[in-house]
Image (cartoon, rainbow over all chains, first blue to last red; front, side, top):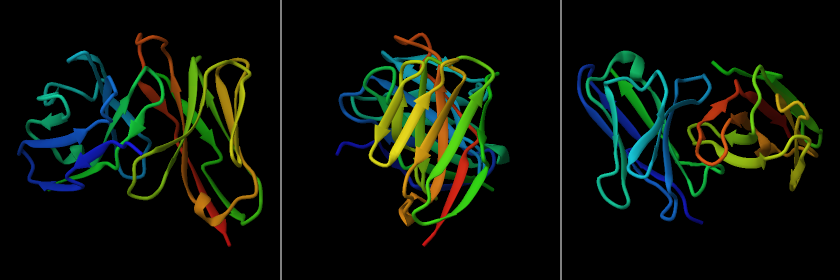
Length: 112
Length: 114
């Protein structure tokens, strides 16, 4: 069964460092998303991406965040200068249409 | 912003029991989805509901989209140990790309005693 894959599964980084989280969405999907989940809390929307541009972003997704689809298969989330409060699980998701978003296994980001 | 409140926060039940959890919102959604999350994993889609009043089943799971479009419930019948996890409702506002972000509920933790 096709699935969304994310790498790495766990990333530890020092405060102030840049991180890139990688995702390979399901191949025929057109809509891509990043969500995050702080430990013990609910899943929160960060950004959606369609037709090679951001279609919507939340107030969490400030200038420190960016997304890119560098080729036909990868979708990345970059955090330019990480802060302690960026520590969370980051989930990539994709959907063929506007519903039925499928989530990856997540990347656990720990900022120390 | 939109808030989705789930109840109960947690449930501890015996294997074989039926379970019911619900989700309420202060705003209207056009689509409701229910996800299950196992520890350290991503949410897995269980059921999607598209129309007010719709009742949909997926095996032992049944979910309904409330008539007011502000609530939904999920029932699990004859629970088994692998039902353990956190169940999230999620609402979606838009049709056709207007906005298709998901607003997640606060989650219901389900523990099943064998």
